[in-house]
Length: 157
Image (cartoon, rainbow, N blue to C red; front, side, top):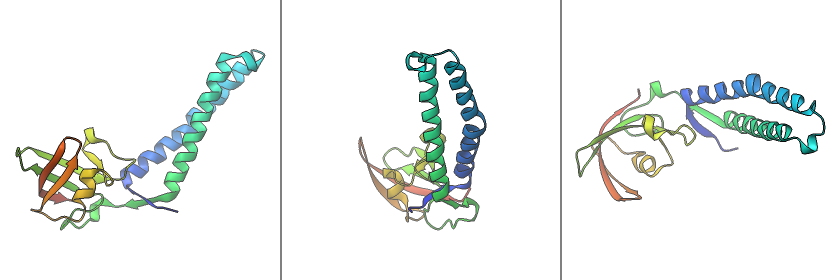
């Protein structure tokens, strides 16, 4: 079983979503299905069909989250060494060409959110940064071409 590295925060978010699906969504969907079924023939009942599709989605998502949580390898980002870029660390980068700075946290694929500054360890930038040290210049192939970044800072929080 392949482990999924994730931060404690990412693990907690998945647990919260799973709890909400089980305690809130699932009962609501089952109630909607029962109400729709009470209206008679379910073979020609649009409300029942919609509720059933929603139930299928909720059950599928519960199964997916159960699997992810079972395979989770939770990384405590507070205790990371900061001598090189590793999963969970925060990295301040300077674009060599423009001197523009960007800050990212390297996270698991399911935690990635570029607007929040979290990039996947499997993304082009994430892959290129792993293992590099403070002051290193890293080339990254992106859709718009090749970008060069200098690692300006590495931190655990």
